[in-house]
Image 1 (cartoon, each protein chain N blue to C red):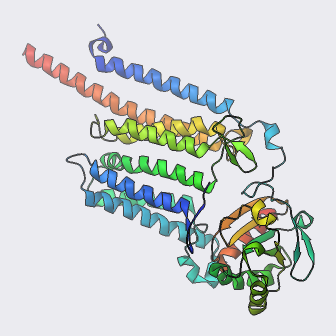
Image 2 (image 1 turned 90 degrees about the horizontal axis):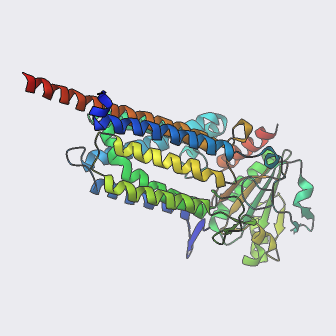
Length: 192
Length: 258
């Protein structure tokens, strides 16, 4: 009689080995079967306010009366910063945003979007003057852009690449100049 | 999806809250189910907090080193609460090393410590999946199934909830086996094996999988190797048990014949 038939533990061990190999073979089959087809890889990105998706398009007017359409800015990285004057973290991160605008202004577009449906315009204008902000501040008077971007909390900042794809979303703040620069360097470096 | 919990003027990050809650419940549960004669609750806490602390510090330092020109100009940014300024892989490696060192210095058995930590891993698995559901970062492919959720412009498989259910199921199954290991490390290896299998299976429904060449999903590749490693280690332990039992039998027979 063999050792295997003598010892029930050895028989169980053989069964377990067989089960393990069978499971691994099935798992390999499942991995290969569920791989992403090449057609799906080349499909255009759909639109959503989330990392990896095409940023929803909008046309908004700035405080200086200039009109900005997001899709017209393709070719340059874009930062969208949603804010309101009553929000302390929004106010706190404005100097950092202004600093990166001065430093990287030629390489990217920074747009501040005032959540005008949740803000008083005179207060927003006062903050722009107080902080001496020179980057474009767009007014979302109808609230459609804030809805399209599903902004749950202020501030919220979107980092968008040259192709219009959202690369990062930062909910809350305040963002420091260093954390903004880290993300911008990454965004610019990825596309060079 | 609920990334922010607004309580009056306070905007709390729901995913972070869920992970912290999972950590608290996991540690409490692990302490309550510590196997007799293994490590103490104080030793368990030392291992956990040393691993977490070292991991977090390393994750920030390595991230800063990679962006040293920016951090050199603003060194206080090292203390920033910005979770985006972390290197997760560096944190994981250093955290694991810190756990190993802590286990050795306290003269604990690594496998017994991992068994004791398994309830924490299992509870964290449930709560981190819920955190992913709250943030909307782990989402499935579009579906017409009635339980699909509207997310990112389509009705999608609630993949993070599938993961939470799988993690809960794994916890329930392992719960009955806690303290009944036939050898040190069995509970942990069974947990790792079943979690890897769940990830490998569920990844097929993920819409934003990181990919390897040929469209192979990275997570499935890693999970397959993890499963193979677990099977190998479990088999090795089982083989030792068989050898031990055979040696015992032959010793018994020799004793009888003498």
